[in-house]
Each structure stands twice: as structure tokens, then as C-alpha cells.
Image (cartoon, rainbow, N blue to C red; front, side, top):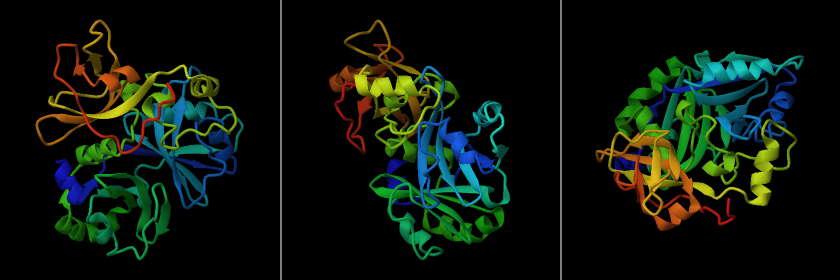
Length: 323
């Protein structure tokens, strides 16, 4: 599947929800809740952001962007109702209102695109494309956000109306391989960008899933839930864990499953953050684990006697800060 996606693909994405915040104090409210800077979020960009418990463990990870009136938070649909309710509880007297924008007319369809041909095909409708990762543009045909590269090529998310989608789909499906949620998830995994799901809520401090390496944590902003622990982890080096890319010859590998280092079989050394079928009878995955286990590269699924994980090159450097 990875080779097909690398050539060029389009995937209708149906497992992501969208929270909208309206009101003049929406940015300041979210700024005090999330790991990233919201107050200085420009309309021409998107950012990753985490939402933590007071103990610094991630409840959710968002892709965040805004227009002149609204701030949007994208997250898995399975998490949206509870997270939207939780955030609403903390609004109090702030002039901010949360709503479900998943099925709003402008966002009815979400298309993920990537691979070598994606840029060329998108230029059928867009005179200019976002020039860098996490750049965003508004267009009469919808919102286009460039995401982190995968398979050596840019990835894009296109949010558009159902009517527009019907117009552009014949061209897209004729020129690109057609995938679905699994294909889009696999591209995100190969981009090294994790997403918190129900299976992994409250399991990770942001640095454990490389979130600060991806620009999802701002250490200069003010307080937010868990901020003290996240900052302490960064500056005191108490974490010794990272997330890395692997291939697992077992299609049953899923988020939340534990992995074990053969050098220490008595306890798990990490956990699968995200996994998606790789078209080879197994799954490719982002796995959070001890740095020592990554260095030894002898890790098994489920137990020290399980199938072996094959370590793949990451698309960015995992620094050696002893996190």
C-alpha cells in the first residue's frame, strides 16, 4: 500500500470530527487550555496542539486552524463529544462558544491527498498551493492545509462542501489511487505524526510522542493544564522515551497494544500509538517506547515471544536529550 500511496493518492477521511469555537475570547480561552500558542495563530497556518490532564497526560491531540471568525480543532470523531463537553465546562464566563462543525456545509467532505502526483492534480483547481508544512489557504473551493510530508512528498487536507466534492471527485479518482481512512492514517504514520485515540488517552506526556519536535508544544506560552509537568519533563530530562516508526507482521497490531524488549521481558517497554494496515499482511505503526529499546531494536508485540518489530527510518531526527 505504501508504494501506491507514494505514487499519488486521494482518500475521503470520515473518522475525524471538527470542533468550532466562536466568540471574541475564543483564542484566549483556548490559549489557557492547550499546549500550543493560540493567541498568535495566523489565518494562513495550522498548528498541532495537545490537551492534557493536570498530570500532563494527553487527553487529545488536535490539528488547529482559524479564519476571521472561528477557530477549528480537528480530532478523532470517537473523542469529540467528550472533549467538546469537557472544554465547554471550562469556558465559564469567557465569550466563547463551542459547536460541532463536522457536518457544516463548508466542511462536509474531508479529502486527504499525498504522494508524487498530488501537487500536480491539485493545481487543476488551485493556482498556488501552500508552500510549506502546516501552511493553510482559503479558496472558493474550500480550505486547503498542507501537512507534514510522507513518502517523500507533501500531504494535503482539503475541506470542501459535498457539492464541490461531487464536481472534483471524477478528476481526482481518475488520476490518483483511491484510499480511505486506513490509507490516510498510514500516511500520517509515515509522516511521524501521532494522533491520540480512545485507546491511548492519558498514556503519554507530549514529549513521549515527539510532540514538541513537531511544533505541538510552545514552552514560552502561559499556563495550561499539565504545563508544569510538561515543562519539567523538557528541562529536567525526566523522560527517557520517544515514538518511532516500525513495521509489524501482524495485522492485529492496534493502538494501545504493548510491546516488549527482549532484553527485559518482564515488563512492557512501550505502546503502539497509531497503527494502520500496510497492504503486506501486517501494519505499520508509531510506537512509543524507551530510548534504550529503540537503540537495541529488539522489540516484540504483546510479549517478548511475540512477532518482531522491524524498525523503519523516521522522517525527522529523534534528538538525544534523554527525554
